[in-house]
Image 1 (tube, helix red, strand yellow):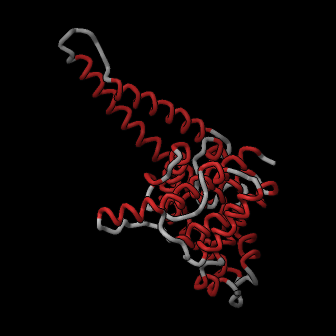
Image 2 (cartoon, helix red, strand yellow; image 1 turned 30 degrees about the vertical axis):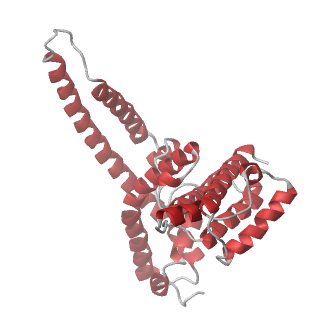
Image 3 (spheres, helix red, strand yellow; image 1 turned 180 degrees about the vertical axis):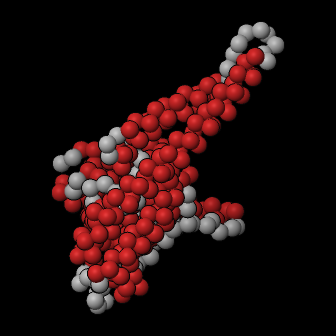
Length: 296
C-alpha cells in the first residue's frame, strides 16, 4: 500500500469528521475519528447512513449556543453532502493501489476541492497542512481554467474541420484517435505562443522592478545602497521563472518540457485521449455534429 496516498486520504477523512462532529451529534471523540478499529468503523458506517437521510441532530455546543444567543447558526453543509465525500474517499482508498500516482492525485484533489466548496471556504478546514494543499490546488485550477476555453476551441475546430473533409465517425474513441496527431501539433503551437508571451511579460516586469530598485537604492539618504527586501525577492523569483521559460522554449518538445516544471495545461499529459473522450461525452450537441448517431 502506498503510504503517501493512504496518509493523504486519512488526513482528509479526519478533517471531514472533525467538522461534521463540531456541528452535528456523531458519538465520536477525537481518538475514534482517527481510529481504524472495527468497532469505530462500524459506528462510523451507522452515522453515515443517518447522514444520507439527513437524520442528524445538532451537536450540544451548537444547540446550546443557539439557545443562549437566541439566533440560528448557519451551517453551510447538509449531512448528506458529508456522506458523499466520505463515500468517495472510501472508494478511492479501495482503488488507490491500482491507480497511477497522477490519476490518484487528480481524484484526491477533486474530493478535497469539493470539500472546500461544501464547507464554504478554506478557512473552515481544521488542519493547516490540508488547508495549504487545498489553496495550492485552487491556484493551479485557476491557472488551468484560463487555458481551458482556448484549447477547447482548438479541439472543437479540428473536429469540425475533419468532419467537413472526411465525414462523421462512429464513436468518440474513433474521432479522438483520428485527430490526435493534428491536435497535439495545434496544442504545441498554442503552448509556444503562450510561453513566448509569458516570457515577454515577465521580462518587462523584471525590467520595471530593477529600475525601481535602482532608484530606491540611489535615493537612500544614509548613503548606504540598499534594496527593499520585497523587491529583491520578487526580482530573484522572476529571474528563476525566466530561466525556466527559456529552458522550455529551447527544448525539442516544449509542451513535454512544460510538464516537468508543473505547467499544467488542459488536455495534456499521458491521458490526453481519455480526457478528451470524457469531455466529448458531456457535449451532446457536438456529438450530433461529429458522429453518425447519438450515443447514450
